[in-house]
Image (cartoon, rainbow, N blue to C red):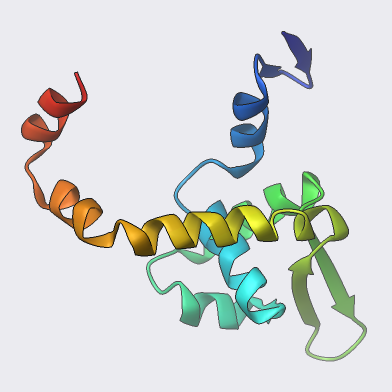
Length: 125
């Protein structure tokens, strides 16, 4: 196990999830994978349930971790675009596999998610 900047990395899955976990990061990465380049307002339309504050934080985190590039154009008003970085591009096959798994198991997943929380917990244990 190694510690880097307060982040604990015990196994390859844990290391990966450190950068990808959360409600919004995978969705943001998927949108960038699908559409290439997005501006802040486009993200807000694509992900209407995310607050501007949360979107800003998640984009900053993804940029800090080297998965997303932020390009600011010297215009008035300022134009800012987001795209997957070269490192972020390496996630494309992973995102595609998650999408394929979700599509192949859609009915089962929906049934599980529609069950009350206690019933789901009993199945997991």
